[in-house]
Length: 332
Image 1 (cartoon, one colour):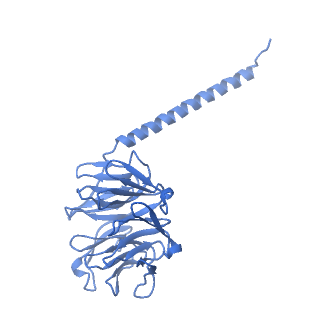
Image 2 (cartoon, helix red, strand yellow):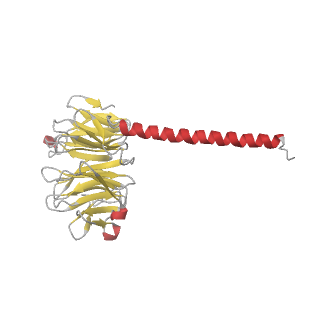
Image 3 (cartoon, one colour):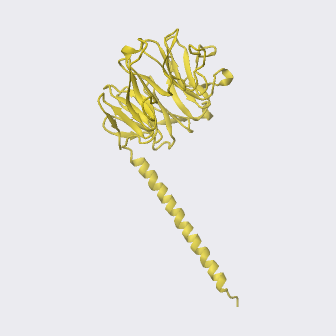
């Protein structure tokens, strides 16, 4: 008669115990993931609490935040995570186009188009230059431009046309795109800044003949001046000459309704970053009146003035709102 030794019995028992523990672990892991996903889907009424790169207000008055937690919409009363059921990607950019549709730029998952009801995802498989999208802009024709880490992509509603270093773009990592009143397109890149006149890319040189490098933000103000914020500080081009306002690193540049220029930049008075305002009345007088309204240890990002005149600014850990007198950290 065949007999099983004590050692064999013990090994068999160990195997069964290990198998049982593994099954329990896997089951627990699956249930935990399911619970976390359910929480993520259902817990939608909260403000951004992580990196918030872009803030925009739509034509209905809602405020949209592109954050590492997703695209979050604020209707004045509550916050809703619009992309929680669609993508867990980090989002850096948001745009409402002239038709009222939305475009969301993600880091790694391309672009999401949202018509208020359904989503469509565009990636490199559709012709997008790169799936890491940091900036979105609509030009006068209605074409949508995407600043990516692989070049600039222009979408005409049917196909993508990509511009890279092979076409004369100084660097394929594109931070900012605008079209000025004359129709020229300006590009801020991790390399040099430039404009595109419809035929070729022309690199920009300041009054000293040196290029603008790692330009993070370009805007055109109400007077037609072009502002650059980046590694070389804050510069303004009035059409013929450049003026430098600070040599500190500037991440974002924004013009409010009164013509004041706001920046998120390295602080000149404290450690960390500052939200600063350059008074419109002083900008053409040689010595700008600058006020650092708030400084933080981390960083500030995108800036928005809402319809009520309040200033919103993104940070490493969420969003601040300034009502003209005090700052409020938006919490869950």
